[in-house]
Length: 336
Ligand SMILES: Cc1cc2nc3c(=O)[nH]c(=O)nc-3n(C[C@H](O)[C@H](O)[C@H](O)COP(=O)(O)OP(=O)(O)OC[C@H]3O[C@@H](n4cnc5c(N)ncnc54)[C@H](O)[C@@H]3O)c2cc1C
Image (cartoon, rainbow, N blue to C red; front, side, top):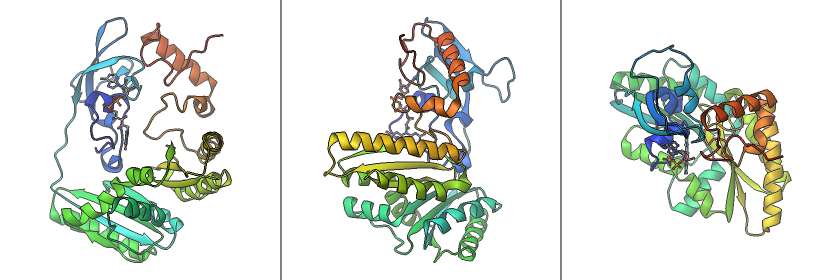
């Protein structure tokens, strides 16, 4: 697990079901929660599940609460499953001449008999933004798009086999090269640039608007190309990047100083509508990890349908009939 927000609490991670870059191998926060103690809005103290390995006793409220964005109850205690830490890891950078070739490599990596820890892609334009604004240097200069693949292992032999298989697959599938960052220092130069993209984009623009869709992994290149076309047709710069090992593409729209508040607001709204329609058409979902909150509420029904919205409302009322927990988030009760 490696959720993006390093200052997050355990309760915050669980209630937002935080994911992050290492979800390809380790899964989401949900996969590590055994049980929890929670307080309901009426003051009842509840235990959802218990510290057992399996449990089919009644409805699984624990899994309903995970990811509920603080709208159902307050978590006061969480029991987590722990894994042994890996003893070694290695990062590979595969540069490709185009984004399509880079995205086509993702299923090839996943077909290998070694589970990667993380698979991320970066386009050269985005690497340039980080280098230019944050004074960080990416170690690989070739390629219009790079695939970053990380492996964890419990032995050097297992790690070497994974790295060799991935490097061979990259070269056989059109990578210009395969840079192997096998020391923490070398890997650091790669992940520092990846980790700096949000800050880099902030420094490179007046403000940003993010779309957090998740699409089937086979549709990543199609989504990214169309997303750029959509944003450009509304006059905004867009920098998609993200967790291509799980299809969660953060599509960051960047505002340049020349845009007025009104132009920015209407262009981002129009772009978001089209981006969400595109994600849906490709078989994707509205949010991969940042949730619904109130910012994505207006698009939720489009994805889940009216019957699901009824179910969400019934669930909310069963926990919180006075609507006091994070009112207006995830589900909205409009006054007639
Ligand atoms: C820069 C950045 C990068 C991020 N990257 C990722 C990422 O890569 N992957 C990912 O999955 N998420 C990501 N997030 C989202 C973030 O990691 C999660 O939202 C985070 O785990 C929330 O934890 P927190 O303690 O900061 O909660 P807060 O931000 O304080 O709260 C988040 C919500 O949870 C509720 N809440 C908090 N604690 C409790 C509790 N004990 N009981 C009930 N409700 C509670 C709050 O009311 C609020 O609605 C990112 C966020 C930021 C700002």
